[in-house]
Image 1: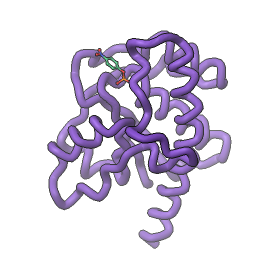
Image 2 (image 1 turned 30 degrees about the vertical axis):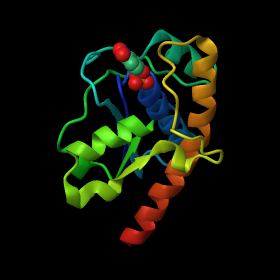
Image 3 (image 1 turned 90 degrees about the horizontal axis):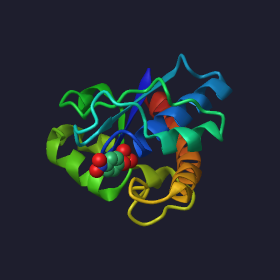
Image 4 (image 1 turned 180 degrees about the vertical axis):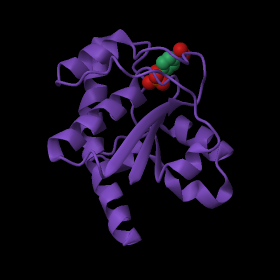
Length: 160
Ligand code: 4NP
């Protein structure tokens, strides 16, 4: 099974939203048995917390329930366990590359590489802004999860 780990700073806004949207896409396509997803934060302040209520509200508008997710921080073995480690912004990617074993660095990618619009710097942190930031975040995530699925499908084909 090919798996993606979505990573942001706190694991309460961007990466759990991406995890929830990706899982919903798998259900819509009937692919839950073939691909897996999780999310984590480079920081540990929110470990065990549910996603930010503003992220939950933005996801709910798109029919996605994030309430069952709980925050955790990135663990050293994540780089071996996940085929793709998608940092939501460039700072996340930098932090991930610092802790990633050199041989696995190719698995670490910027999430917005998989979007059509490819905004510079990645998905902006919506934590200190208003609700509109969360809707913009969700638009980008909706674009990106399609590209992430295509990437995992290509990896699966490559693996034979
Ligand atoms: P996230 O957003 O990285 O998308 O989960 C943030 C959540 C919390 C904090 C920063 C960003 N914080 O500083 O507590």
